[in-house]
Length: 333
Image 1 (cartoon, rainbow, N blue to C red):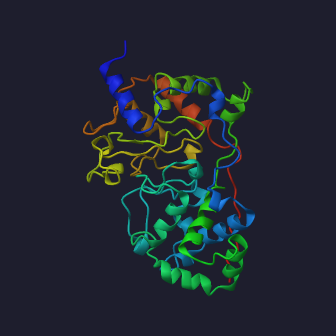
Image 2 (cartoon, rainbow, N blue to C red):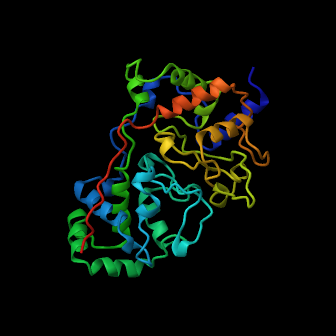
Image 3 (cartoon, rainbow, N blue to C red):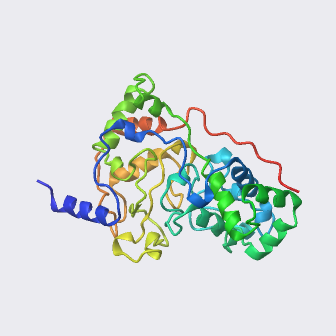
C-alpha cells in the first residue's frame, strides 16, 4: 500500500515535471554524443571558436578583469573552488558558482532556473551589477572596434553583426561543448564488469534503492531538471526558485546539479556550505537540518558506515577518466 506521504511526493513531483520512477535500464545513464542546440544556433566550428574567445576574454566585464572563465575555470571543474562566487569589485556573492559541465543538457539555467536557454543565461552575468557589471551597449561598441572579433562574428553568424543576441548565441555554442567524458561507470554500463569496484556497484544499488538518490539525480546527467529544498541551515534564507515561480513548495528550492565529475566541483550546495562529499552524504543521511519547506523527497536514510563508503565509491566512478581539456585561446586584437 502506498503511504499518504508517498502519494504527496508523487503529486508534487508530477506538478514540477519530475519523474517519480527509478531508472530501471542502466543504458539510460549513457551520455549522448552532443548537447542539443536550437535551430537558430546549431553548433559549428566557427561559433564555438568565437564563443570560446568571448568566454576567456576579460574585456566582457566593465573592469576588464573578469571573464566568464574567472568563475568557470576549467582547472577547477569549470567552477571556481570557492564557497560563494566573487564578483565585480571583489564583492562576495550569495551563491556558489555552478559548474558549466553538461549545462547544455539542462532545461533550466542558474541555480534558480530563471533562464530557460543557454543563450539567455550567457548574457545575464555580463550585465549583472554584482558579477561582470558591463553595459551591453558599451560592450558591443568595444567588440565592434576589434578587427579580430569582426572577422570571427562574420564567420560565425554571417550578416547578423555584433549584438547582444549573437554574443549570447556564441557563448552558448561554446558552453554546449563543455561536457564530461567517459567514466568508469560508463564502461561498466557498457558491459565491462571490472571497470568499477565491488564497493561502487553496491553504491549504485544504494543510489537507486535505500539512498533514494535517483529520485532527483536521474538519467545520464544525474539530475532531474527539478528544484528542491534540501533543508540547509542558512543565516539568511535564500528563497531560490520561489523568487522565479511563486509556488509554496519551491521556497528555498534550488536546481539539482549533475553528479558527473562531482569530485572536481567542490564545495557543494547552492551556498557552498559543504567542502566534501562525505559531508553531503551525512546531510542526506540526516534527512536535512531544517524542516520548514523541506522537500517531500527528503527523509532520514539511516545508512551504515559501509553504505556511506560504498555510495561515495559510486559517485567517484562518475568522474571522467580523462577530464575535458581545453586550450586557452589567443584573444582577438
